[in-house]
Amino acid sequence: MTESTTLSNLLAWCSKRDFWIDPRIQIIAGPCGVAVFSRDTPIPPDSILVRIPRESVLSVKSSSISDLIPPHPYGRGAQFSLALALSVELVNGATSPFLPYLKSLPREIPDIPLFWGAHQPTLAQYGPPMEWLNGTEASKILFDSGDNHNSLFSDIDQYFDQVACSVYGKVFESSPEMTPSLQDFYHAYALVASRSFLVDSYHGLAMVPIADAFNHAQENHVHLESDFDVCPECGSLQRCVHDATLEHIPRSTNSDGADDFYEMVSNLAIPPNSEVFNTYGEALNNAELLVQYGFILDGNDNDHLTWTFNELAQFSENHLSASSWTWDSVGGRAHFQDLLRSISSLLWDRVSESELVTLDRTRTFSLNGDAIISHSLWLYFALLACLRNAASGPPNKSALVVLLEEILECQIALEQRIASEEDKSELMLVPPQLPDDEQRRASPYGIILELAQLLASLCRARSARTGRAGVEMTELGEILDVRRTACGVLAIIYFLYVLRRAFLLQRLPNDMTPTRMAISLALTERSLLDSCISSWEVIADFLEA
Image (cartoon, rainbow, N blue to C red):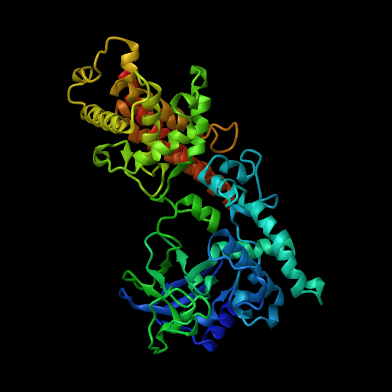
């Protein structure tokens, strides 16, 4: 069956099920999959482009085995449950009411990193694409973020063994030859991970025909609108018999039929003859896009790197072990974490004046796409340095807050003087000349020096383990070091780096897209880390002068 025939059958099925598609848009099947384009007419904002009947989405509730699947409202569990339902519908084939939609889905496992394996083409000089994801945010999502501290892959296998196989045994008891394999479950999971939507409190996570035809862009034209607060028992938008036993949810007593649909609505003006984009998440970085959907964006403003407290604690132990330092010397790891948490919740107004630190309450310990660290990451090392170098025992919380504010004030002043470059001889007046080494270490400038050195070491350690082992990925560290001497030279060298990077990626054959994306992600993260290293080395070098 050709792609155009498959699409025609899908649209015919949608028509029978009362989907409505604005005639100003068209759905096109191409070599890279289905996409949505506007026709010759411009489309203004707030236009309803697609109406999708609520009863036509494929969810656990609407599947043929809804009574056999353990409920999971969100997270990985919701993805696994929907994958189980989808895998059964795919096997049922002709008997499934969703057949035309199922036939429109990719027949192969979508090319997401979770399933990159031996089938991926490789070249000796580049190696398998997964090697380039070592140490990246994508690797952390894949291997370090399970609900039970398991990798995503092991969680999938565990769900298949402990839940899916039992359900399959009941569903296909009379026809065991139809039982989906682990590979079939992988396929269903990949489809769910890359195409599903959270639609309301009844269906939860669902496969939404036509809505999943819109590709992703950060500057998206449309979004999916739905009334999430429906009855979780029957899906009613109006008051129903379940309201007496459930928490009160304000729902209408009127029904005009309009609420029986999910809608794709334009939020921007759409020019004629152009692709119409949805967003899979406005804040998704390239690591998240790659892991879940199998693609990355050029210049993603949401790119960032993160650390957990345990990662920082392990780094501290390893890096400071030579000084015979232990967590006990600062009251223990748990005490330090509690103290850090209480201090980081305070309002740090002056952070906005720093070029190296930003107030970020959405991510705890992070480095953003401008190579600026979060205030919590700054606080971790500033607090650690304060406690390590306290001259007369650990100060109390109030004294620590005052000291940290003073340190931040001194750092901002230091940043501004270095940036001004008006009279470099004046810069030597910034660090006070203290009587002895012990006092110097406990002074605000001594603390700034130590946290600058620790931050640079943290980024250097992560950069060293990012990407393929033993491969010198770029000379970005050396390139960014010249920032202190000549911005014009930096611009030229950076331009040459971009050309070199582009040439490297272009040399890859077209069928090595995973390797291309993995190298690009690793290079981006190394670039952010090296830029951060350079910024804090400027501070450290000056204070050591």
